[in-house]
Image (cartoon, rainbow, N blue to C red; front, top):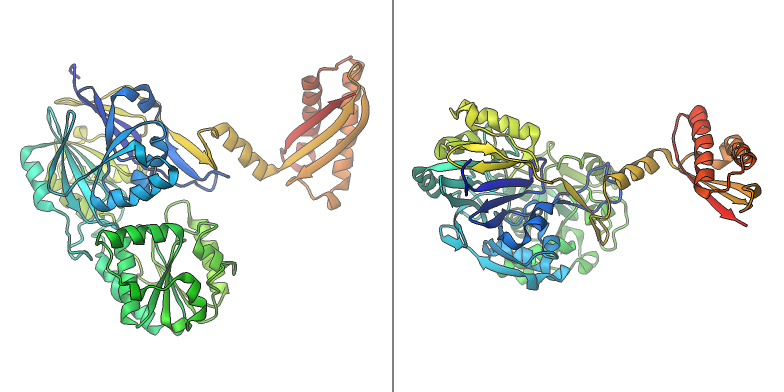
Length: 552
């Protein structure tokens, strides 16, 4: 490490899927590469979103130059509405990426804190000490880019999320010539998408999904509902094409779906005529065989359009036997239970349901092993750090890099909080504060691991509230105890347990009064100790015990 060497700090996206955020610290300024979020896992009750911990940026707030976005997915730009509450940022992104972002920023009231800089694949952009070049890559959303940034020792190349689709829907293939031009200059460090590193072979072309959707629509007797990600513009285009070929109209459903469709149509990324679209409110008055509903909810989100349909609770779409439902997406890890619950509900309606792996109605937007090896061979970096994936994905990508001849000592596997000095030789630096910031309603960061632990405990063992009135001078019991439980035992079948809990509370308070204890916190601890021991002996469970002590 030499004085003035750049440093790369990973704040998210290495060790998990989502929350992609890296900070390039160079020339006294900091440039963020992506600013994503992730969605809560099952063991995060009550949490709406998960952001990176950006304390490192707060500690260096006067040096933050801006953020460059590789593409418009939430796991790469979803943190910006929250980040912009604390920072004014220059944001560099392609046309569709900025169009999708603008609606989110306006919704959060922070659009005025973002200085948009639209970039075009193939061009070079300078921002302070950073010189960036952009190269188009195929992905499951249009306008994705790889980003090359000049370092003193060579080029840092970030692949973005990509695959080598030879027949993309929009005809815009990954710019291998441009990426090869960076390789000829000398790529010092390559950061590459690892999501599908475990998958052998090549990822299928997006174009293969279209004929399958068209066949399903053509064979459907009644209403067709297709659920996909709202940002998957190529997939939405194929749904539109299938509806058009089948002589049907399209109704878009879901707030994020409408936002994405509007932005994509305005900027020429989605081709659908006004007369081909009907409002969702009109579907009920149309013959079911004349419409396709394109909606969100493919991940089983509880209040999404598809989940409400599965529960017979959607306002506009009431699924009937012989309707057709297509889940045109993959399963994001952690969402399996929710998706299976929605699938069961859909099958219960009597609808015909199509989903992977039963029918090939989805292909991934990420490169599989052979594509990753091809890219490594094309780039031939001096150093390699796999990114965007859980630890097993990163490890497998590292193995692929070794297979194509990159020396093992030139491959680094990093996790959130790691920093790397980017001199002639890469060296690990000190770790910085990183991790998760939870969004719960309007609160950001006010829920931590301790609160989550309590929520999990409440969900697992329930709560018991003990209300007593004591004499303020002597600590003796005046009234009660009333024992109220939620989620612990069913009162009507456990009267003996509740009654014994009352008696043990009385006994604990008598012992405290005999010792002339009047301090409320001490009395509360006596009740917790007595009941905690009893409840565990009788049920092998440990409910949260909340004594409520009133003095007279």
